[in-house]
Image: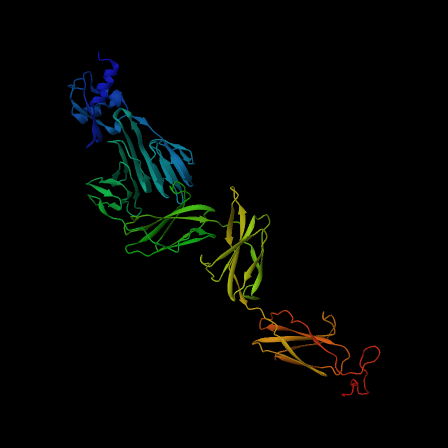
Length: 552
């Protein structure tokens, strides 16, 4: 008898590479060695010893006990025992469930295992990301029914078998490179898509059951169930409809353009505007929490190039955008990553009020912040769109800022709340609505000239759109104002008669926005030629006028 280890060597030498297409399906070839018969081969390699009959029929063997050494037999790949494998659920979004061969249904969750012959059913809005033992990923899209028909490792033959049956809907796959002669098939009623390692999608068109395949990377073989096979390369798609004897292969539509894309969004909904494209009959967006698209959170389709995303949680997302052609084949992919941050809430702007006018110089900006904030961020600049080249930013612990607005013009401003992250970096929430105010030159009190006698006359240079407040007082602090008037002309007259004591005069400019300048320096008005009594007051005549000293 041949030693056991020599038997293993001989057995390995007899397993010939090559997968054949036969009436019974995929087969592998085996070269008979002394001592082989159909009974022992069925018991050794097939799922059940009684399947020797299938071997006899396939290979036209009349006597199962008599096979000449060196004869090449064909073993049905579908009957090979192999080692069953499982699929792991990386992510599940309800409604999605698994249905076992006995009809038992269970809701899927991340971390669950799936067995051969289980169905995965994703309802409207449902989604599941699966990973096979070899690292291949399967995305089960909404409204999809997929069966894990066969997941087998055929170690004796150095290959594997993975057969998926797509009943309805769509699956997207990222298949790792397969061992030589391995099978990885996605089967529908009308076609089989076979791969060795690539990124592609297969769907069953809802309106008529047509089988659609689109390839992003690598290449696949699409075999019409009742016809011919075609190779479909990256950037191409294939359609197999009910009467097609061969897949109809064509180039996919190019990736869409995305107008006004932003790296950050502060509020929902997010409206994506795609560039209109010739040949487009629909637009498709999927949003995931990760770049690998194992955690798809939302899917949106629309007939027009405007798609609306809503209901997303704060965080980083990636959107995958594709155009659909007249056959519903999706085109090339455009991916766009963005941050959604709708919290913490923005402060409420207070001053300056909307459209207020302020004087050039130091301007105080105030807002109503929220308690326990890490701080507040102010942005301001001449443009309402806050272009990067012109915007200025300041941070403060309280919702109060003082900025230098030295130049006349319109300033726009907005504020956001800062919150501390786990790494200690302050991150802002959404900005408030934009406020604006106008900056105008501050009014200046002009220099004043005096003509002082019994009648005090003052005059100064004219200033357009300006009024003037003029005050006359007995002291430099103007604690005792004896006369006050507001004039529009650049002159004023006070008739006080003869005086025994000095007076002081000053003026203030008031512009058209009711802004007031600082008062001008006080000017002294010396006493006039009055006769004064012992208290220092003027001696009055019977008509009430001051008695004047005679002029020498």
